[in-house]
Length: 338
View 1 (cartoon, rainbow, N blue to C red):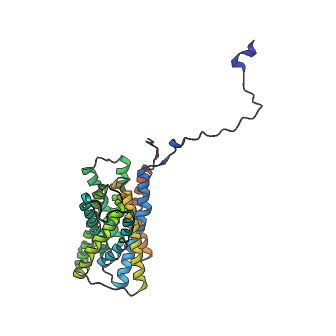
View 2: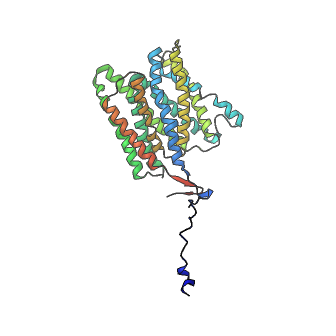
C-alpha cells in the first residue's frame, strides 16, 4: 500500500521537537591561545605598560634630588640580586652552565648598556621622545637582525603593523629634532637622542642573544646576571663619571623603588615574550611604552605634548592593534588552526 512506502512516513509536527544543543568539541580540539598570542599579550601588558612609567619616574627623581643616571641604574640592579636565592634553592649555578656562560654575560652587558643609555637620555630630552627613539631603533634593528639571522619571516599584516609603528614614532619625534640647532642646548639634545638610539640598538642585540640561550632556569639566571653586571659596572662609573647623591626626600626614594619594581617586571615579561613571538613584533608591541610615557609626561611632569605627539601615539596604537589582531589565533593540542 501507498501508506507503507517510506517516503510517506512524514514526521509528526504536533509534537515539540527537543531543543538542539551545539556539539561540544572534544578536549583535544578546544582552542587555546597560540604561543605568539601569549607572547604579544605578555609584552603589551607586562612589558610595555610598566616600562612606560620608568621614564617619567626617573625624570621625577632627577628633578627632585639631581639623582644621577648611574645611581638610578645601581638601585635598579639591587632589585635583581635577590633572584640568587631562587637559583640556590633550585640548585642551579648562579652564572649559568659553563658552556654558555659567556653568552649569558654578554646578554647582561648589552642590557645594562641599553638601560644606562636610556636613563641618561631621560634626563636630557623629554621622556616621551627618548622612549620613542629607543623603541623605534630597537624595532628597526630587531627586524633587520631577524631578516639577516633567522628564517622566521613576517606576514604582510605584520609588516604593515611594523612599518606603521615606525611611522608613528617618526611623527612623534620628528618635530623635536628642530632643537638640534640651538647651540649648547641643541648639542645636549643631540647627545640625548644618540644615547636613546644606542639604547635601542643594544636592546635588540640583547634580545637576539637571549633567543639563542636554551638551558633550565634561563630567565632567572639572566635576570640575576643583569643585576650583578650592572652593579659591577655602575659602582666605579658612578664615582668616576658622576657624583653620587643621597636623596633626603620621600619622593625620590619612592620613585627609585617604583622604578626598580616596574623595571624588573618589564624585564621578566619581555624576556619571556621574545621566546614566544617574533622579536620585531615584540619590540613593535613594546612601543606602547611611548604612549604611556607621553600621557605621564603631560599629567605628572606637566610637560607639553604637541599635536604631533598625539597623532603619532594614535598611529602607534593602531599598528599595535593590527599586529595583535593578526596574531590572535587558536591552537589545538598538536595542531594549529589555519
